[in-house]
Length: 447
Image (cartoon, rainbow, N blue to C red):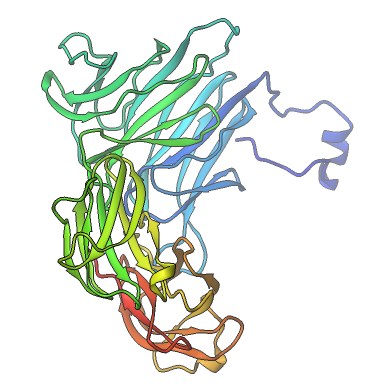
C-alpha cells in the first residue's frame, strides 16, 4: 500500500532510499477521484486519500474532482457521530487506480457504518469538434427499485426498447454520447414505460461535456419523490427538478404595521389563496405556479385595496416561504427564502431569520437553559434584516433563546425555551413589536 509522505527522505532511509534505487512503485499517469454523499439524513462526510483530507460533502453533492497518480491508495471516510467531539473513521475503500480512469465513491447506507459503492468509467478526452455530450446515469435512491432511463427530444413518449438502460440501486450505466439540443430525461418503472416516476423539462447541455446523472431519494425540501442531480467533470452539481410537481409557497405575515390581508396568486386577482391573515400567522405550504407569478396583497375582504404586489419565480418541486415585512405601510417589502427542511440525524438544525425591520442587525444567543447570557457568546453575530437564514448546529438539549442588539448584551427578545432532539429543525424568526426598541420571537412550526 502506498502512503502519502512528506517530500524528502526520512533519516532512517537516507542510505537505502535516497542514495540508491527505490523499490517504490512508479506512476505512469493519473486518474480522477470524487465522492458523492447519498445518505439522506447525514451531516457532511469527510473524504480523505490516505490521511490527507480532500473535502467534506453533504447530501446529494459531490466533492471536487481531483487527479492522482495511478497507484494504490486507501480512501477514508469520516464523520462526527452523536456524542463524539471529533470525527470518527466510518469506512475505508482500497483502490488500485488506473491511469485515465474516473472513480466516483458513492456513500450510502447507515451513517455509522456506510456502504461505499464505486462507480468507474474512463476519463473523456475531446478533440474539439464533437457535437455530443457524454452521459452516465447512476442510481443512489435506496427506497427505489429498478428503473428504465430514457433521454429523448421533447414530446417523444418513452417506448419500451428505446431506453438507455435499466438501473438497479447502486448501479451506473455505461457512458452514452448524446447529441446536443433540447432533451427530456424520463425514468419509468422497469419494463413499463407507461409508469413514469420522473420527467424533466427540456434540458440543453453543451457539447464536449462529460456528465454524470444520479437519482436520490428526495428530502423534505422537495415536493417530488425522486431527486436528480447532474455533475460535470469538475464535480459541480446542479439540480434537475421533476417538471410535473408543483412548488409550494408558505406565506408568513411579519409586518406589525399591516392589518389582516388577503393574498392572490393570479393576475388580475380573482380568488384569494389566503384570506384574513393576521400579523404573526402563517398559512402553511400552498401550491404555486411554476415560473413567474405576481402575488398581490390586499386589505382583508377588500380586493381593491392593494397594499403590495410582488413578482416571484418558483422552480418545480421546491418549497418556498415569503414574509411580508415593514414597520410602516410605506416600507412594505418581502423576504423570500427556500428553507432547508432536510433533517440531519446527528444534530439539531437551527435556522434564524431577522424579519424585524426596526432592527437592522441582531445578535442571537442560544444558551443552555437557565444559564446567564452575561457569560455567553452569540451563536450568530449581526444577523441582518432580510438576510437569508443563518444555519447553526446544536446538540440535543434544552436551551434559552435570546435576541440582543449587535455587539451588546441588551436583550430585545427572550428568553424563549427550546427543547430539541437530534434531527429537529428549529426555525425562529424575529418580528417587530409596537415598541421599536424591542422585538419578539416566533417559531415557524414544521409543515
